[in-house]
Image (cartoon, rainbow, N blue to C red; front, top):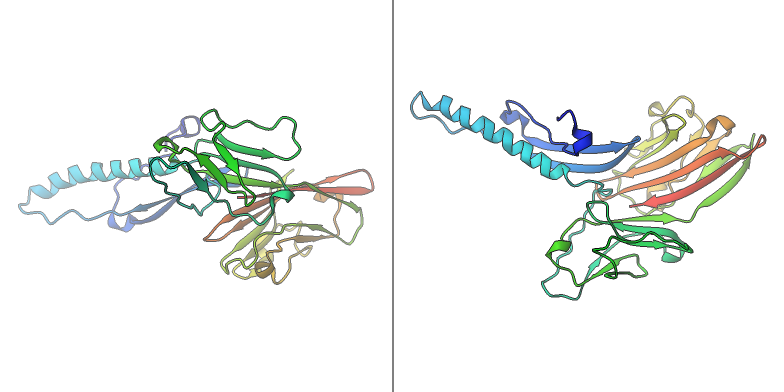
Length: 301
């Protein structure tokens, strides 16, 4: 990769001397402060050169084909990695005809608009398309190209009026729930970190609670239908618990037993499956000498 990849944004990868065994699916993951924010998939197929007629041609064909294959790999990975800030593996394709009055961009959510604190629609380049902020005196403004062209309905879907070819893009919808605060006395038996999402999750769903600050730790890991205490940090081993029917109910709340001031920090719960990606973040911080304050902010994509 280029030495200045982070400055230029060119995350292309060069694979030298490709062979047929290199064929397969490649993934480019962009991770910021311990959180995966972008996934890109590329199918690579390396074919063998055709059988040579005279003895001289194999060397000529190899000299020509190898640079072409390498160039194709670089171009392909470069284009796919250009899709930045994608927070969901599932992309719904919306197609509208020329001259229509509006296009509807669907957004699946587990909460009603009345329970939402903030909703942000963005395009592939991170520009605000539509921003909804409840009870905000100075809400964020959309980018000028989308101004006075968007309207959001109760199911959180977005209507974009008078779409043109220049609006062809990948759009993301981020939903923030209202903040919750829970006060727990130090020495209490347990504290609950709440997270409610879609019910009847797929069996391949993986759930991971993490602590991001003041230091990164794996708090609880659930995958392949069971808990994995061997994959969590020793600090939390034997102190965390999730419900047995969590995939059926969608209740991914975590119970942390015997909380102390040493458990203060920023926590997050990441949910992954083949259909979607979700993320929940929360903060545990000491209120005073005797109490611990827990506040959380739910973010789903």
